[in-house]
Length: 457
Ligand code: GUN
Ligand code: ZN
Image (tube, rainbow, N blue to C red):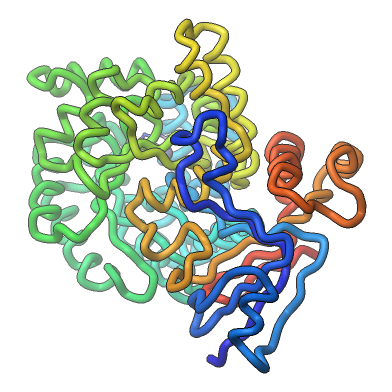
């Protein structure tokens, strides 16, 4: 592929806004007239149009007007086989799994069904501006293969893995620890670091895992230390009680995963609503990540994630955000930010310490960093994606700040006139409008490895 350029208005991040309290904008980079040079799917150069164009005489340039261009969004926790059961009525986590989720996921043993589900899954992600996700599959290797194959066809970056469960699910859903070990191993050989696919050893959650299953995960991680580990942790009170009963020798939920050598860099625990201060501290020290899933935590009534604890600089935990579809009722990371903001505001009705209250406020800087560079850092992907640094993969989302409900464009006209944003502060205000008032109608285009894979009709 020969090089080409994209000219437009760009916003990305170079640092963590939580480290710049009172000066969050120092973590962001805004180019009102920028040029991004793409070569072989990667960013070859990036900067002001005048500066970059002078270095690339004769470059073919696509100009994108009246839009804000951001790095593609990263969804740190999502379930591909739950696409069809999104928005299922009326249950908390454990009965919801039994009533709605396992019956649907069982269907993914059928290859044709799984293939169709995988296609629809990526169609939804790309229409939402999400270019990377860390996904759960099912206990079926067939479903896992279809997900990786579809990701490969679209060349999107994916972390996923066979999702192990040998307890607490219907007999035709659970599988044995031995089968899980054997199938995971085969799938690692076949998919890990093939194209943009990355493999996560994936015990579904401690409550659904026998000691044998967790021991199989430990062995897989020891034999394949380059793989990721993805699971759920401390999502609901009932789940935490069940884990205490099943693993009475472990002092808390995190200790179960620690005992099997799973917690460290490239480990992600989804939800973490009920993590103690001590568990946050141990996650911080080990380099593990927590994935905050506000839509799901509200939809399933799981609880309020303590943003201000996770982001305490004395024991900062790597944090990504996740839609957790279908526990989450939206694919769009804009909607995830909407709920994240509200969780922070509700927390602040009870949090006494002013510094913690401040950290609970999801500004547009914190929000959009969390679904781009912050997520990439949390998931140890920041050498590949997360911002527009040369050498990274050219994944981007083109945002129409007026897209969305009718109220959106009038709201945004308070911030900018027809000429669009000329300062970082204006751009950030437009982004706040998008996360609080917008939805996937704001996603005008989604580009993956320098190819436009989605364009709004
Ligand atoms: N814990 C175990 N499985 C699941 C799941 O599918 N969704 C959520 N939200 N939590 C889980
Ligand atoms: Zn989940």
